[in-house]
Amino acid sequence: MKSRIIKGIALSLAVAFVATSCSKDDDPISVTGIQVEQSQALVRVGATTQLQASITPVDASVKTIEWMSRNANRATVDANGLVTGVSTGKVWIVATASATALKDSCEVTVAAPQATETLSGNITASRTLSAGKTYILDGWVYVKDGATLTIEPGTIIKGKSATKASLIIERGAKLIAEGTKDKPIIFTSDKDPGQRATGDWGGIILCGKATINVAGGEGIIEGGVGSTYGGGTSPNDNDNSGVLRYIRIEYAGYAFEKDKEINGLTFGGVGKGTVVENIQVSFANDDSYEWFGGTVNVKNIVALGGLDDDFDTDFGFNGFVQFALSLRNPDVADAASKSNGFESDNDGSGTTNSPKTNPRFANVSIYGPKAVTTGTINQYYQSAMHIRRNSDLQAYNSVFAGWPTGVKIDDSKGAAGSNAALKGCIIAGMDNNYATDAANTWFNTSGWSNRVATIADLKVTSFSITNPNFLPQTGSALLTGSVTVPTGLEQTDYIGAFKNSDWTAGWAEWNPQAAIY
Image (tube, rainbow, N blue to C red):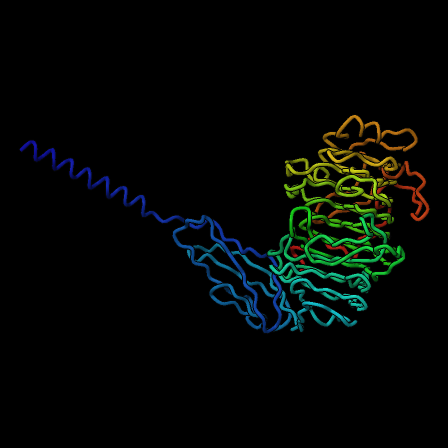
């Protein structure tokens, strides 16, 4: 009898335990939040765009999302977040977690229908791209010898994702892309706002007939596109590859192979008959700009948030570059080769091949990750400048701020060339000003008038990556100490790219992720 009583008690406890456990396991997990991935989106009348939303926590018991348009006459949305444009204007699309009253929304701009045209293969006859269309680059698009591609102000060209889309201007061809301050020409990703990423497409490559320092005077440009650059045994340093003014290049660049990448904007043997002014390369997946030889002169250029180097020069580049700016994203750097502001080689092996790489830079502002944040930065950032392998790069009246290392002038394949120089330059806010004692001695060469400062000494208004203001305030170290520049450059009385006017105003875009095209 006693045994049966004990067994009965044990069974009751077991049942109670199971019931309690089941009850606990079956408790619903409440929704605590909902987020629409896109804060802004663009759709054209009659077309569609897909919105995405997520529930927090991911294991919530009920994860049903209800979609609603606040103006169905402007745009409709189906149960899966697919928005269809109805009439032009703006409308809020709202996502609600059905288990709660929690909501989030996206502002959708409904634009008029616009014709699109796909560009692919070879352009063999001269033609014009008009601002009345959006153009899609599908794969490698070549403008062939003798053809001129003209692009009207305000035209938008999108690189088709996953096709390595690139525009290649071959030797003897021209690109006439003259945007204006009010109507820049935009090369960008084909993805919606909030979905764009570095490397969505390839980039722009210009190939010319000017001098390069490789055997035979010509080579095959990096990136796998197969195009020849350089003038061979009869180079033309006045060669003209066209006009590029007021252009934005966004989310370009990809690695075809290690050390053979397509950059945001690549110059291969481009001559000084070519005009390049007011260019912004944003969030490139390799270098923002790279010059392979040539003599082209460039001014008013911006490198924003690139992966690898901002300004890379090699194979005998001998042009002038003035008023250049770079601003880095502290979270993003190149694990493969480490990221620098300047990187410069005579060539990849450090030979003394002629002509030596001898760009003359002036009024450059290279603001690294530590200028943007006092927090943690990506471990693969290296130096504000890496001048090596017999390069004779020269920089005047320039500022370099906020990098792990300031000056680095050597590597395993050779040091900077004997004519390399920095004059009237400031380094500021580095963890280490110099990579070596030799770099210290070189930077502090008598008569070069270089200085070491703090970032606070620069008194730059704002280094915000999405809303910067680079104008120096009264008392800034940038407003004194300039030196005389070589003939071919404009003489200024200040250090860096700006004094009291902002040449990026009106055409540059600091937050292209949110831009609606």
